[in-house]
Length: 116
Length: 243
Length: 109
Image (cartoon, rainbow over all chains, first blue to last red; front, side):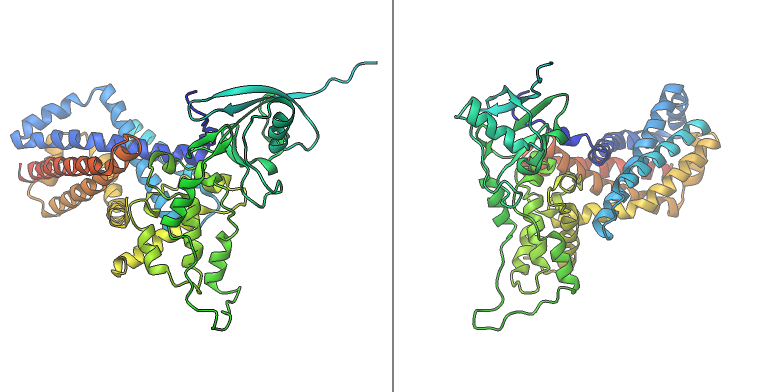
């Protein structure tokens, strides 16, 4: 404990969901250049891109892609929640909205994992 | 006959300035005891040099807010039985403000930001004019009334991580007050006020964590007030009305 | 953060809602058919529609991510707003160049 300021108020579903929104956004920002570079391989021809895609077929990359899809879905739904708070009349069911958003993102990710 | 066992609570109180430490006292429990009663007991019976701030003791003045087991609260309206955790209480000064000494936070930055957000009434009439007639049923007045009961205690400011992470952010209380004035039909300061709350430290920094709404002892919703400011400033921005 | 950055942040967010939904649908569709370079390029090669869609997506994501990273670098990185502006422009430039390069690659390949 370095100062007087314990922050136990953070143990709250809404606070935690807001941090998930932020961390997912940062992860997407880190992933985007990688995604662009990978697709950019097509400049060197279809074979070069196919070589990369073939590498992505291993199970670890599939798991990473599932996590990435969850990250995208949870950031989208978290963002929709912010847009609803900011632009529509106040709704009291904030925690249900946050949990619903996380649940839908998880369903999308699991559906992806099962389909690949 | 068994002797009556006096029930006690272990209370850790912040001592010193930012670089201080928690000091533990054993305080007897009483019925309907408030956290402020605990702090007062320590000052009267254990250490008269303990510094803390209070005035009304009934939730009207807004001066006794402290951090109680990690959550900012009015100590005068918080029963010990409601917040005690495993027989322990940790009481510190309000967060996000400089510590003067012990449990006393320096409220100056809080009120400076209140002024930055132009959270003060700007009259549109003079004393020579008739009294303004404001219908309590009007949409503007209802919106202002929903946010008006703020007593500047600083609980929301201490609970706001956006304040914690960004020194320039005006914080929930100042913006909530600005929102009541934006909806006050007698006020003439909106052009300048909307520009102020749309500037770098203004309402657009809010991430809607809603800690302010969860912890406001007056049950106000600064997150909703700030959302109102975001909409109103956006309209003004699109119309080119912001200076 | 001020009203101008906020406007750009939220406008690109709203724009990307339908773009992301289409993107996720395409991801499911493409992976079910067995993802391959031939499969991707057969869709995008010479397509004005996909070129427009992905260019718009790249621009919106660039603006949105740039402003978001600026905010995070102030709030979590402790940067002053000026340094955070530099991070935002640097990030934005890199994303725009790499993104449009990728769009060109899959459309003209």
